[in-house]
Amino acid sequence: MTVDSTPDALYHDAARLHGAALGRLARAYEADADLRRDLLQEIHIALWRSFSTFDGRCSLRTWIYRVAHNVAASHVLHQRRTRPEAMVGLEELENLPDGDNVLQAAERALSLDRLLNMIQRLKPLDRHVILSYLEGHDAAAISEITGLSPGNVAVKIHRIKSLLACQFQQGETR
Amino acid sequence: MTNELRNPAQKLWQDQPVEGVTMSVEVIRKRAAKFERKIRWRNVREYVAALIAAVPLGYFFVTARDVFARITFGLLIAGLAWMVVQLHRKGSVRSMPTEVSTLTSLQFYRAELERQREAVNTVWSWYLAPLIPGLLVYTVWSAIRSPRPSAWLGLALLDAVIASMFYVIWKMNVRAARCLQRMIDELKAENLR
Image (cartoon, rainbow over all chains, first blue to last red; front, side):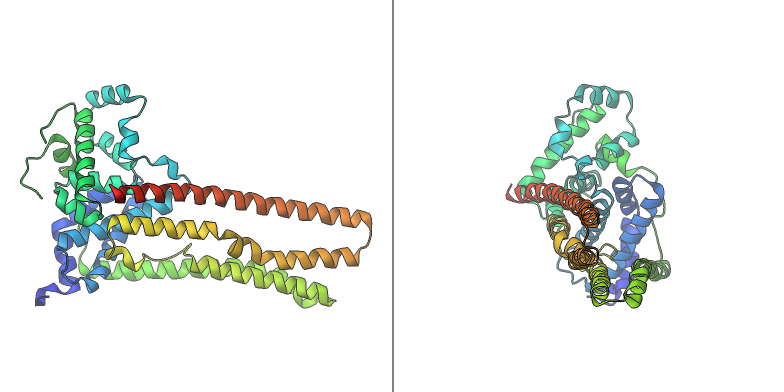
């Protein structure tokens, strides 16, 4: 580690470079504004603390998102442990019986709320993949952070793209 | 960030306004300290609540006239203390696990689910069983003290109510454990893909 790689310096860089993404991440994991502030704060605190053990074996970005998603997943599990069935996987979301209505609603409103609503229903791991995709991370980075195999990540991204294409009524090339 | 052109969803997502995106090191230090104080106080509140519950039991223990009564209330207090210690150990109130930065999301999520499943699976041993010795001694003591059929009937009814409550708590936890196991199995399947 260099002189500039002290935990405080690393945290400063992390907050400066990825602060906005962490704010969006918190928004995807918690709908309630007060709880979201708590979650964001918890993520920042966990990050700051974690840098005392950062050994550079993975990239800073991988480390940051790993910590942030794990804190957020833990938050979701604690908030929803009484009703875990409220969360669904990508497969279930694709096969919703009222898919046509969902499609029509998506056609009417290209809205962030709709996207957030969809993300907030996902299980933590699927939520992690879709958020990473929305943040523009590539499959290799997502695989490294989540621990999912590259093939599995590719399949999930394909599904996410299809899902988003339906939501936004725009086909996209892979 | 990749060089790939952003699609509408990515653009919408990345361009959204967000609050509280930066915190200085000084602010984060203060908030970390405040967060730790909050956790400490929550722990203190848990212990105080247990203490309040133990006060009447303690009173009965001190003022009990015979050995059976004293054993009964002593066992109930010990059971309550055991429950509080286990509750604390199993993390009803806890700070973030240390593995938060070392495990991948898949590993961390699975570990959290397994920890929760373990807690609900073993609910008998740490939440229900500690109270049983005290309740049993109380039943025997009451039956000996009042050897009348009507008293025994009342005692049997009381025990039946308590047993039903235990059964309901146990069933709810079995259901929760099954649900958690399903989620763990799904994650295992994800790992194999």
